[in-house]
Length: 122
Length: 107
Image (cartoon, rainbow over all chains, first blue to last red):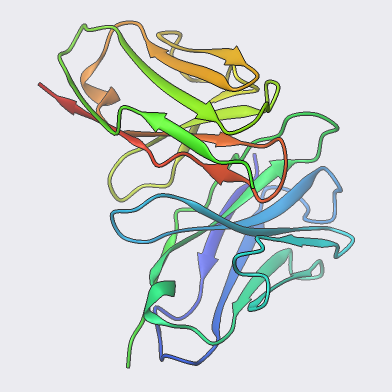
């Protein structure tokens, strides 16, 4: 069973780049069976899909964040990463990594990492 | 973007009650609708995928129905561990959008 674990700084200064990594265990990130996603949730609010990457490196981003987001994949480390530039207080949230099965029909997010809180503050 | 509207936003119910949460899409999404349960401080957990398929390990008191634009999540007999926030999510097209959530509280 695939398991995911987020890691990265818990505090980022405004205007800097927020960087997180998701380490995948129990399966290969190169398998081609999944998309690898980032999702965030501000405190007390709902869930926002940030984007995803496939093992080939192809990406799809939420247009609301597209100008600031980069998702990359490192198959040698079985990890994928998120970079969000020009961070502001509005980017303060719990960030989750999750997988989507790569199907030709409906898909869904499962499993999820436990989440990591990132605060943007000086 | 396809918008998702859940109702109600909050709901008070008692153990043993039958509860229904609805989710409406701003356009047809066929059966591309998922339901998640989230407890405080935890990641969301997949309950139902493809509108009506029960995720492995999820109790059978949870069920989903609907297609097109209107969907429901039903809990047939509430248990103490079911008090949580529930989200729907469309996977018809990107950007994937979640509903705003329904907080289920103990009456």
